[in-house]
Image (cartoon, rainbow, N blue to C red; front, side, top):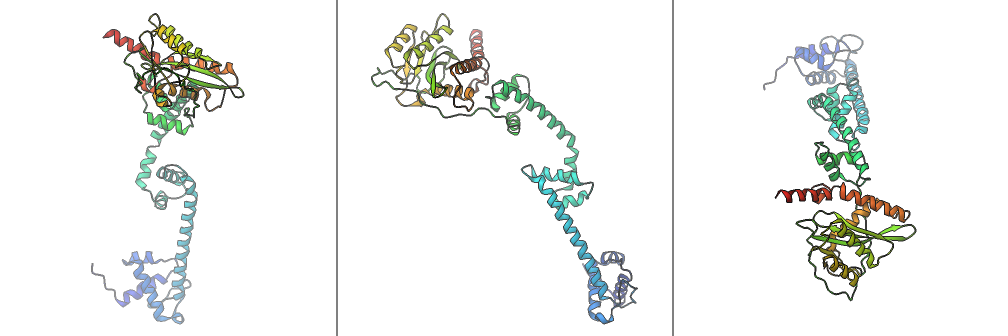
Length: 406
């Protein structure tokens, strides 16, 4: 673009007009004359340099004749503009200081929009958005969606109440997967990620794994028994393949009760169990007989029972009871916990969800009551992830229905 050429008279008149009134500004006079503020400023500076301080006329006191420029007036104008800039910077610094507390651990963009909304009555939205480096149109879109956000917050609060109720009903054991399944069963359409978020935000936590103590005492002289499970902890039908184990129940001042289990690999149902203050063979044979009683007339006839190589399971007494009930024995390798992982996992879950971080029960009565209550809930109500989040007995009922229909 070709720049305009200004005559000396035009320049002198422009400088004189600027100096004629203390309220005049470079930008205001420049707009009136169709020139830039920097062009006018340069003319004023050049005139001041040309004439020197001795020949200047004070701008603030009286209008300067054409062709005369006051160096003091120029300095006063520059000083006024510098002070205005300082005031602006101080205001921006104060705004940023107030905004800092909005950015602590939350969504930064949303926090900035919230700050603008909270201060828009005292400072212009345009300026606030410039200082915080956010889009003004984005702020107005965010503000227009306030009603929808409030509705989502209300719905989240209602859902959190339901989640807390489900969590409490499970004795504080359910994590987000089982809570989500429970909500689905109640007809609530909700994504598991939303449940996870609300549980995290409200401090609702399921019970986590804790270290277990080994209770298996191998029997060196035991007659070898083949491993018929081979770490395949599944079964095509109920009452065909079982696993069992012994676990300790800590009570009082260092004492223990012991629990023997018989777990159906098809439905994950605890078909039989026994508690005693000893680890003699009678503990495991009582659990096996309890399972046979639960299964009705056929009992456990034809089923496979898998265990570790503990002395109780390797004893002649246990072998006799298995023959009596028509049970085929199976055992994993010595010292290999993975060969009986399903039974050990069940025991770990039981203690994790009944003790809930405590080291022991107060007494044997409390331990028995807690285990009995949990096992009943486990079979009839507790949702199992490998069963599609339904309980073991419901899974058996569905399997029977499908078998009848076929």
